[in-house]
Image (cartoon, rainbow, N blue to C red; front, side, top):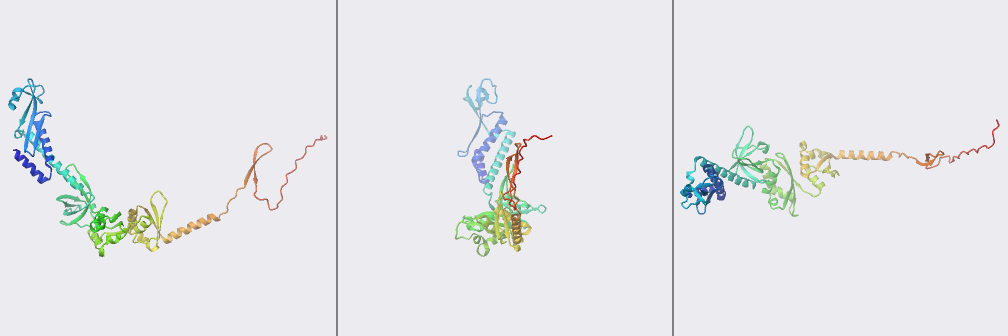
Amino acid sequence: MNNEFFEALQMLEREKGIKADYLVEKITNAIIIAVKKDYEVADNVTVVIDPENCRFSVSITKMVVDIVEVPETEILLDEALAYDPKAKVGFPCVMHLDPKKFGRIAAQTAKHVIRQGIREAERSQMLEQFQEKVCEIVTATVQKVEPVTGNATVEIDHNEFLLFKNDQLPSDELHEGDRIKVYVVDVVNLDRRCSLKISRTHKDLVKRLFELEVPEIYDGTIEVKSISREAGSRTKIAVMSHNPDVDPIGACVGPRGSRISAIVDELHGEKIDIIRYSEDDAQFIKEALSPATVLDVQILPVPEKSCRVTVPDNQLSLAIGNKGQNAKLAAKLTGYKIDIRSESDAKAEAEAAQNEKEELLEEPAVETPAADTTLSEDGNAQDILLDDEPEESGAEEESAPIPEEDTDEETV
């Protein structure tokens, strides 16, 4: 029986890829649970599984006593002698069990625990394997497409996953047997199994495709600084070169456009703008709004990153793009809020501001005469206005003479 048991362990290890040590631990726990239920014992069960020496044994240890008070841990001498002829009162007795004689319920319990342990091992192994694929691009084979929902079942490394309709490109027309590139967003660990969340609309899918097609990006000579994308329509990708002899845009385009063409074909015609990254924010914003020509970029002094861009009148619609797409992608690429205006509007605003400034300068200033404070005869303070300049007549007002008191008595 031991040989068959250990051969089964080796077979599980080969087929499932589960380590024997893990299986031994799960089987040991399963047998202990089965023995406790079948023999109504406590924690005095010992299970030894040694794959190297093909040794497998199950035993219960009880103390030999004259009077049994705790049946789970104590045994009478007469019963102990059936297991060990040398048993004595006051000494432990090791009772070796035959797994073949386990009860039906105990055997089913052990079988259930072992199967559960194998499933957990498979899920743990699959989770570890899937974690290595997160944030990477993989090739998937379409197995079937649901006609109503449009969700597709794809196969990756002999495992099936669901590619939802909203994670597909608008231009995708998937059929059974198609091989497509998908981006692994995350691992979803469910109760019974783990799965992958995959997407063809994620912006990093474009980055991984460039890494596959452009060796300079893969080896770090060219760095992808940022990406903004509207899946199925247009993508802007900002790149910079760490080698002055390597042109980042030319390397990404490739000879006769071969590299960029392969990426566009995989994305079913999605437009890709390759932008030269610059540490100068104003210059970077100019590049991000291509193919439109930018005349001026004014970084606004506000807490949020914001700027005002001036373009030629005939370039305004091109800079904004269809439904504002070009401006939105440029804003996501640079991290700035972009206010786009035409050259004529900018001049009109400047002229209006200049006129307003001149009007303010032409308004006469309202002078307020200075005031001096003196005391009146009754001792109260009075303000006397002091003119800066004398009146045109030049005459000074003389103070009225104070009449002297008449000391003569009045005649009645």
